[in-house]
Figure 1: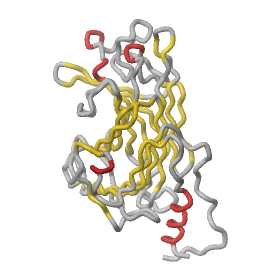
Figure 2: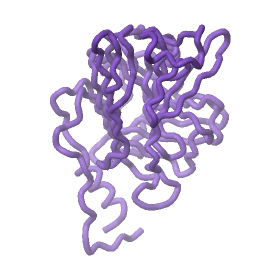
Figure 3: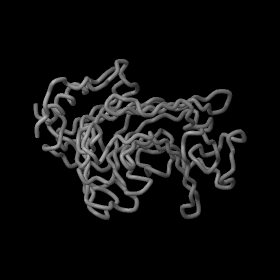
Length: 312
């Protein structure tokens, strides 16, 4: 059996139908994305050669060398009904020369924003932006809440002092698992808190994690609760690749009581490399699903076929 046949079979089995709680599904079979609720930048390149089994096409994002955004431009956005929990599932594949940003940060890929900012607000300077992205072959989850930073008390832990503070850096709140940044931008500060999976999911080497093959990515996030007028550190982040869970945190703080009614209400795809792409490189996304919960049944790849000889 040829390698391509095995991969096609794997993709077909891993794929799961939409379930209760589905907010929207995008197969990228054609470029008429405006009719399916996308807005802002609706210029999308559809590849009919790179696609998962049963699909007519995928979204292609190509960076030219030195470019900060792909050839299709800035972020494409999609509004969703307000929700405290969010699940995303998609297939992704990288070009054989993919190196990402070549730095310890970026490229940004998927963004999740809330009702505390407008549908046209900037993606980064917000009351909360969550990111799901690949850095150096490892998936990571990042949050920023730049608008909430108390600029008068930078690098002071305000966790037990006030709910009027940033939770993603600059005002304290270390959870023991994430790394934080706090840096000045103009006259104000920006922040960022990152949870790395610690596992290479997109490898340069041929094998089950090879970046040049299609892989199924899933992520679930849930905002923390508010009790007694304070934000509680019980938010959740979970990430799976090809059915295997590689990140599971349930002590996350994403909002304070200042924003007790904060809800996710926007998803964006906005590939971005701040220092410019080191080389011309591409990645593809197919069969995107956004819902409020992960399916109850486990989505996992089948056991590898026995007694088969792979030929090129």
